[in-house]
Image (cartoon, rainbow, N blue to C red; front, side, top):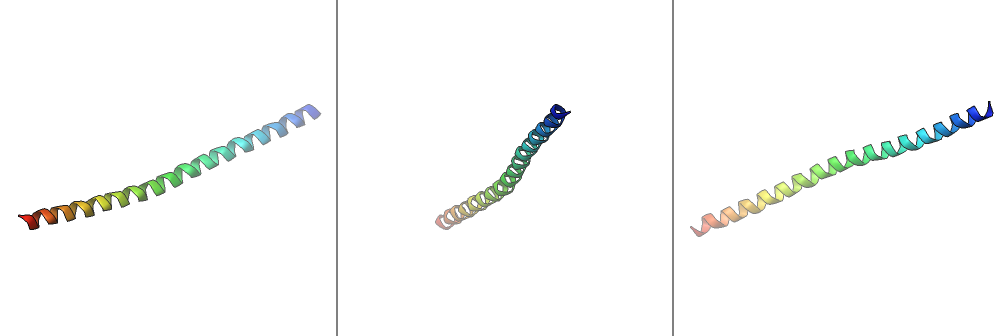
Length: 62
């Protein structure tokens, strides 16, 4: 009986470890998507601003 209890406890500890790693991986993926999207939108906005200024300068030179 004691080996069965030890096996069950061991499996519970391993399952907890696996679920912890999976939870942290999922959280990291979610945060990466969130902040990656924000960084991408900021770089797109910066590109658009630079492009508008360059085009404005070109129009003034014509």
